Amino acid sequence: MNKKIKVGIVGYGNLGKGVEGCITQTGDLELEAIFTRRDPASLSTSSKTDSVNNILNYKDKIDVMILCGGSANDLDHQAPEIGKDFNIVDAFDNHGRIPEYFQMMDKVSKSNKKLSLIATGWDPGLFSLNRLLLESILPEGVSYTFWGNGVSQGHSDALRRVDGVKHGVQYTIPNPDAIEEVRKGTNPQLSPEERHKRVCYVVTNDDCDEFEVENCIKTMPDYFEPYDTSVEFISEEEFKRDHQGMPHGGFVIRTGNSINSNNQRIEFSLDLKSNPEFTASVLVSYARAVYKIYKEGKTGAITVFDVPFGQLSEKSPEQLRKELL
Figure 1: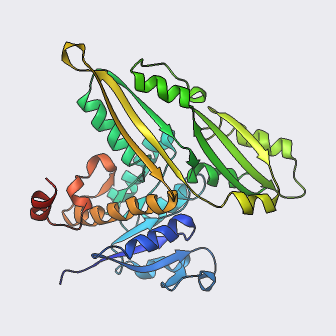
Figure 2 (figure 1 turned 60 degrees about the vertical axis):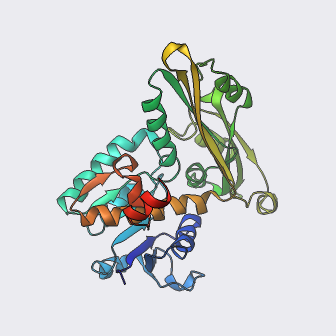
């Protein structure tokens, strides 16, 4: 029997819980431990838990560490620190900062002979792959990405980090008129605010200034500033009653012309009932790929663009050619 790939999870929020569950659906991965900044005994799980302060005790026991912290405050310091001693996969989702984040992780990983796959999930991640594929196939055309309707984990996490916010969730709402125009092949020029609305539902601490909280949210660079953002303050009871689900989804669409000016359209879409569980599934499959690629001698930072699809699968190349090709 082949050796199972030993996986660690850092962070046990919604994404970490999703990763834990996804690993049980695999035949070649095994969860070694979950690492947390909280009291490990406080986690409601039957899996092994430990303090993140003890993570180096597992240096020779874990093949790939999956980082489940947020991009707004966690990964900038967690990833380079953990990436010195472990191969890692993360879901860094601040699109505008990916180049500098990649450079940082590439330097850390290469100098320590480790491998880091950054910025995976479904966007960045699967949507990134589709943007690349569609642009390559239809070089004369325009690509559009729409997110929603649904809950953005990264934006909700950034929202909850604002001083005075007790609970918060952000819904991304695509503009249906903009989607219709894109599908017609008119190639409209659309600003961020014309493509989406960002709707925030917030419960504040009793002593905070709601006007200040709203201004802080709406002016947050990269996350809310470029968009049509609304902030609605609600009670904790309403939040717990109406905002516990985590659906999401979206579209990548490219329209363009092939030879003889024939209009072509390619579209990739997702409709997700649980955003964190689906994102976790992507992270787990890429953890498998990181293990395989590292065993081949690769170090440094990579992205989804550097991973052959076959490396994501439990199946052998022979099986893939027979069953899926």
